[in-house]
Image (cartoon, rainbow, N blue to C red; front, side, top):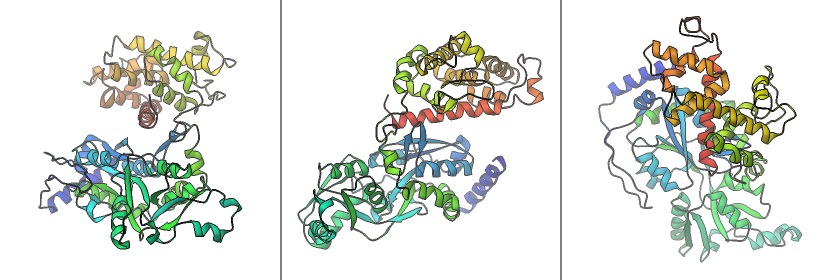
Length: 482
């Protein structure tokens, strides 16, 4: 990873010598009322590498980004994770189903670096953003409802009742996502058929509109063909076979003043698209008939808005430690994948994976119920938090220390703080300070140091534990309401 990052930095330095024109972000204007912002300083690939974080914006649907049974999933989430790992940085995701917010997040300097979704490449959008190497192609299709008694009708009779000729859309009302490429396509289609189509722009995501067509709330909407095809697996009563466009490229988008980021994405995407991993990831979300059933599950952030069946207990006991219930859920998922029967090699048990001595102190055992174990786990978190309050005053910062102590034991965390003091780091800051000594506490130089009282620890696991719990918590906050 470090070697790869050095290679990328070398590439960036050479590219900067070659590029003689300095890009200045100008005020941009959209015909679709999409706002842009002037920026003072450019944040391109070198600045992203320096800060160590790629900030992306995407949207919620059954393919792009969602949480299922506690696990963040999605085609574009997986691609973002792979690209961030490729350039050696962490990933932050901001999700919204408002395309205007996606664009504002990108163009408001530093808030987002890339829009990562199935963004249709159009001429008007190209005036606002730079598109990356296409990750796919799709046609726009009409989503319409089959006749009420279609199951008892011959195919020819069903066809007679459906719109197959685009000329027949004259005078029809079609609801589409606001600021989407579907709006532009329908406007062009009106010119092509020489008649009016009543276009209703709404603040809903495409799959929400498909659901409304299926339930008879609206007559028509428009989607990308692959999304329409997936939803036909779930809604047998809809049809998505009438094309409204030629095939169009689907891409990510970056700001126009970030040529190095765009080039890095393009090189990676061109290579990755030819791999079996890309094909497997694509098929997992776009060619899997179970994908929409997963999306409609009660334990999907799209379908039921739940993380797990245990959500009521996380909500009930979160106040014991004063944390967001979704953070408690993330701890439980990290510990046991919500499996209350889980027992680790070291004897940790239950949904919160309490060690036997800790469990005994908290008066639970293997026969105790899930809510009893969740309460015990939260009480243990509170106990750790109370000890660390006198050392780390900032509540948000202290959460990281508490999570580390829950995983490895509070003694090792206090050791890492002492090492931070000795080596000139801040003992009250986790990232790039105390986390370094946790990460390296398996090395004799540190665990044999005179200030260390609790010896050796497999700190790599704890370092990753804190990162993964907090990363998943951010996904839970994106996808599930408080």
